[in-house]
Structures are given as C-alpha cells and as structure tokens.
Image (cartoon, rainbow over all chains, first blue to last red; front, side, top):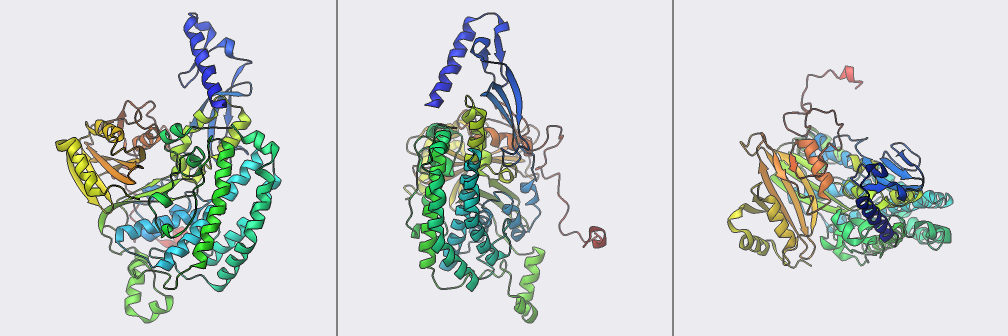
Length: 428
Length: 168
C-alpha cells in the first residue's frame, strides 16, 4: 500500500517538473530525482543518520534528505569497519581463517565457522561421519535461534518496547553457555575444526541442552506474546519498509528478508548440507515483505530451528566426532608427546604446512540473515589463493534507500533493525 | 530436487553459444565456463532469459588476480544460480591488466551494483556503464587497489622478527 503511494507522489512531482520551465521551482536530489517546491511541505534538510547513532546498532551511515519527517533520499556510506578479511585470508593457513569468519556475522558466528569448515572439507574431498553432521546442525540451529532472538528483540526496542529486549536474553545466555561448553568462547566462537569438532558433547553440554530444550518453548512463547499480536507493535511495523518479491530478487535478497517477501528460497532445502535433508521442517514465508512480515518469518524460523534441534538431538547417531583427516585435525595432546606421527601432524598443522589440492569450490550455508557463501581458490599453497565471502547483508543492504524513501525517519530505524544488517559482515 | 545435471547443462550451453564458450569444465560440483570479456554481458543476459536454463539469480561477483598469466591477469567471476534447476554456474571472463574493462551487469541484476563497486575497489576493474563506480569499502583517497598480488601482506613464515619487541 504505502509503497504504491510513494511511487505516485514521485511521478506526480516528475510531471509537475516537466510542466514548469523555471528552474527556480525545482529541487534536484543527489539520486537524480527532481522535486518541485510545491510538493515540499516544509524545509528540506540533510541529516546524518549514523555512523554512530544509538538507533543504528552498528556503524552504518545514511545521509538522509528529509522534508520534515519524510525521507526524500538516502545516501549510504559503508566500510567504516573494513578489516580486509579477504586479503588477510590470503596469508593465513586454512585452520587460521576460522577466527576471521567469526567476525563476519558475529550474532551467529558458529554458522560462519562451520560453513568455512565445510568449504575446506569440500575442497579436500573429506566426508564426515553422520554424528558430526548432526552435531553441526544442533550448533548451527542454536546459532540461528540466538541470531533471530537478537534481531527480533531489537525491532521491539526500536518500536519502544524495551522490556521485550530483556526477556530473550536469558534464553540467549543459555545458548551462549552451550557454546562455551563446546569451545570456551561466547561471541567469537571459533567452534569446531576442519573435519568435525575438537571434542564431543560433554556431560555438561548434554545437561544444559536438555534444560534449554525443556524451558525454551514456554519462554519463547511468553516473549513472543509481548510482540506478535501487540496492537502498538503491529501498527508500527506493518507496512514499514516494504519490498516486493521482484525487487527483493533483483537486489539479491536471501534468507528471512527474502522469505518475508514471499519467496521460499532456503539453501538448507535447495542444496542440503550437513544432512539437512534428514530433518522435517517448514520454510515460513511472508506476503508483504514489510517489517512485520520479517519479524514473523524469523519468529517462525525460531520454532522450526527448535524442531530441528529436537530431531537432531533425539536421533544423534553414535560414532566419531570428527573425520579422519590427520593433516588438518589436531591430534590429542598426549599423542603429540608420545607418538611420532601425531607430533609431525601437530607440527604441520600449527605451521600451516598441510598439503591442499589445487582447485576452486563454492560452498554456501543458510546464515542467520541469508546465503553465506565461500568462494575458495586454492593453488596448493599454505593459504588460499583467493577467498571471497558472499556476505548476505552486504548484498541486500543496497536496497535500503529504496525501502525507506517516502517513509518517516522512525520507520527507517525499524526497517534497518528488521533487515538484520550486521556491521561486521557488511564491511568485512 | 535437482532437475538438470551439470553435463546436461553443459550440452545446453554449448547448443546455445557454441564457439563463444572458450572453455568449460566441471570443478567439484559446479560447471565453470570461460567466455570472452566482450561477450560476457550478452551470454549472461541470454542465460538469464533462456526459459529452460533461467539463471535468475546472481549469487556472487568478484575478481581474481593472476599476475603470471600474460594479457589475462585479471578475472571477473560471476556465480549464477538457477533456482528452477537448483544449479549453479560459474562464468569467468579474463581481462588484461593494462585495460581491465568489462561491461557492467547492473542492468541485468541490480544486486551487481555494490559487488562491482567492491571489485573495482579491490582490483581496479572498470565496469562500463556502471551507475556509480566509486570505491565502497576503502577510503576514496586510496591510490592503489589492495587485492592485487603486487601488494603482498607480510610473509607469514618470516623468522627475523624479534618477539621481545612485540610483547610475546
């Protein structure tokens, strides 16, 4: 609805511009758009929305041209926290690239880590035991839940519902404690190894996961009840920052943002990895592609992720927690001291001397906010010849000006939080 | 799920373009084709519009630098994805380092806008017809393209550094 309205105002303005010959009455915007002064209510002002602003949740700069409260045009600046990850990756051994991937989408770093491991395994031609797949699925779906909890609660904050920000944090804390049991870290996890995991689920992990699975659904629905049918929340988010399916596809949207526009593309279904084909889950889709739909799609994905975790945990196969890839998987410490072969492999891995085949692979996983891809070219050297990340939010964030033009500044704020743009991933 | 295999895709592409495909090989699970840089735009356009193939989605666009390969030092790599057939295709076009210039695909896929800007920023590849070809991640004042191989990072295997000076 709102989207169509914007278009008519602009085309009306264009018509008026054509009628008038005197340029005094025209205002040219930097995006090439021309407005006549009659269509402007108040004064045109330029304001900086970001780079460091409490409402931007990261380093995002948008230079807005506003007419009163209405946004006429927006110019984005990205790159404030560019850390040259793709260049850095060209000198690091393969196992040392995992910490770089942590710092892409840091709301769901385990997905990035495991996606990278799967890319290297694809290059090496390693097949991992079924148990590793299921363990990976559990960790990745936990990460997806943590990611969506943050994103959806932040939409609440930006609509003025601060309470709903605190509720999911107790659940996210449980997920972070599970990460801690697996890898010792919480945010930048560096979880897993090439070939599997460095250790199996320990008894504390089992106990905490069971506790999480027991308490999460009720806690989630309690929090969900604060927002989902909340009159104020719905009025604020419905129709805010909409994008149609065609536009979303043209802009390369993937993940929940694309599904909210009504396209059911999901990497887990189209190109299953880590045995996702074993699990029964549905892909929620929205209709209008607005902030409320994006919120609703993520909420349903949390429920589906929980279902996947249940299925994976209840059917967790027996077996090894890593594949036999001694060239990449660090041996046990006691073997390093007592076994010559293990010592050699340990040394080779630490010094980055393991042999890698020549080749190039593209592998992608369904990240927290879209298709997270790794394009890896190996020339057989100790580091990748070239590694390119497909960072979903870098690709879809370019649609943001189009999504907010014509709306109010407050809608721009909730649109930004609802498309789940993560500064670390955006700027690489 | 998969409705077309890579070999069928390869046959279909050869039937469509014939001689215009310089090289085609299957690397891991993806078909890779190499095309002339002057021809890349038309081929991608046809791949997108062909109803049977329908490569409707541009997944990734980026550059690679091969300094040893004469007159084809730079490579633009397009990852296309056909959702109809659940198939990926990698299209490569090589460019000489002196005049790295290729037609922009922004008119086919708007998503290419920032990816081409990033590739320009990193490799200095000029995308003709791009609406706003400026640096995106690095600062505008930068006078080199950092992903080119002539700008190496410090050698990770060097041993001449005295750890005492680095707090280790």
